Length: 172
Image 1 (cartoon, rainbow, N blue to C red):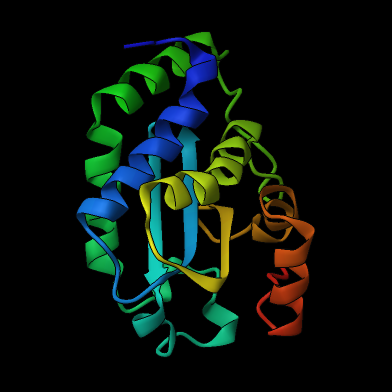
Image 2: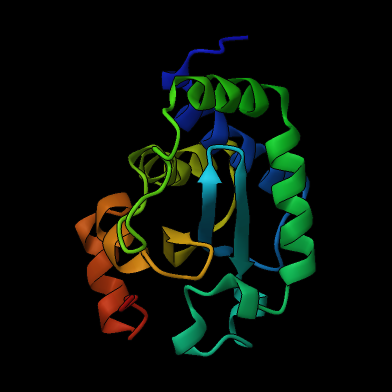
C-alpha cells in the first residue's frame, strides 16, 4: 500500500467509488459533495441519488446537510475515511503540512480535494455506478462555501453548462 502524499486524491476517489458500489444511493448518483474541515482526514462525503433529489430544493443542491439522506451519508464518510489506503495517504499528506496550512480561504477549496473530485466521475464509471445525466461533483467548506469555485474546476465544461441551464450552479 502506497502512503505517498500524492496518492491521496486517487485513494480517496477510489474509496468513494468502492463505497458507492457497496452502499448505493437511491437511484442514479446525481451529486457527490466533499465537505472539508481542517485536514485531509477531517471531512465528510455525501452522495445524492435521483430518488432523493426530488426532495432537495435547487437552493440546497450543494448543501448536503439539507439532503434527506444525511444520516446515511455521514456513515458513508466514516467508512471511507477509515479505509486503510485513505487513512495512510491522508496521514502522509498531514505529515507534510505546516501548522495552519489547511486554513484555506473559505471560498477556495484545497487543491488536493479538487483533484479528488475531478477523479470521482471516472472512478464511478469504471466501477459501473449508475450516474444521472446531470451528475456533478463539488467540494465545499463545512459551512457550505466553495462549491462555486470547485464545480468548474472538478467538472467538464459541459457539466457546468448543464448545471447552469438547470439552475443548479452553486453561487457560494
